[in-house]
Image (cartoon, rainbow, N blue to C red):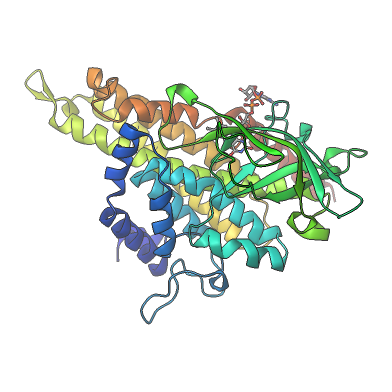
Length: 424
Ligand SMILES: Cc1cc2nc3c(=O)[nH]c(=O)nc-3n(C[C@H](O)[C@H](O)[C@H](O)COP(=O)(O)OP(=O)(O)OC[C@H]3O[C@@H](n4cnc5c(N)ncnc54)[C@H](O)[C@@H]3O)c2cc1C
């Protein structure tokens, strides 16, 4: 028995091993280096990942996937996929090719949400192409006035009396994959008369041709700009988008009738899934950075010996590795809580996963930079880039302050519940 089989089933281990083989065969690491030098969006590699059947393992088999010779579909899809496979995928992509992992990130949040809340017709329409990697998804929540306070969303969707379509107007910012996505989940106010918790809905928006930056966008949709974050992250896209009376068919209201004004509930559910998958990607991104620190320190000699023999160096690696391992365990525990489908709330665990993973990644990157000395801050090694990526990772999917807010809120809720039970 292998150590990893204590935590993962044989099928899950097989999925990870096959995925790693595929990424090695495709030289995803080489592609990552090329992207850093030439800054291109690795859409073709993403499609190949889909064609090989690795994408969207959370989707049940009926939405497609490559049939193995005489075996099951990849991702344990028989009788319904599991989030744990999606977390394995996010982790391995993070380790192999960061820009590829970022394409997968919001695509996976989008297809997991359509799976959970879409009508049968919507699932049939959108999910197979997302599974094949032909369609990239984005999740558009954040607005200029609605950051951490998501309930301040002002994007408005008005139902037009004749024709029955919605007219969408407003602005979204910091949307990962925004300018490249074929499909955006957009949160908008459908009933301004009530509290936003009861007046938001989600729309599946399919931007038309010519939506790229500088191209002006399709009618009613504009990519205002792609942001350059912390000096730039080649191959990843973070966009500001504008909707101006964009016509969205009624059939694109997520969940159709049952989805009207259900946007807040869908949002908190989406964020719970998003945070655990995002955290999985981060522990993946951190893995090769920690390996770099170990390799470098085992080889670099100063004062007549390898620097790894100085505890000031090797204990940095020990501390960072301990935090990374803890984060990984939390992530897979959370994914299994969600997979159990037993009505557990995993909001606290998901927030802890994101908090631990981003802080562990930061410590890994910070220590690696220090261990590599002057080489760490130069572009000879990917350490400086990892450091910027790790610093950035504390903001998306809810800032780490908001993660702490959720964790303490849930702890006090649990305490109140304990007190109530002891009184009765
Ligand atoms: C790389 C990247 C990718 C992103 N991808 C997406 C995406 O795909 N889709 C999407 O919709 N959004 C995305 N975002 C947006 C992201 O979710 C928001 O940036 C984030 O939620 C914070 O909002 P804000 O930037 O407006 O900061 P603000 O909410 O204005 O916060 C500013 C500061 O105040 C603190 N703060 C705010 N409220 C509290 C509080 N109650 N208690 C303590 N501190 C508080 C924050 O922690 C932060 O430090 C992305 C952001 C980045 C950087």
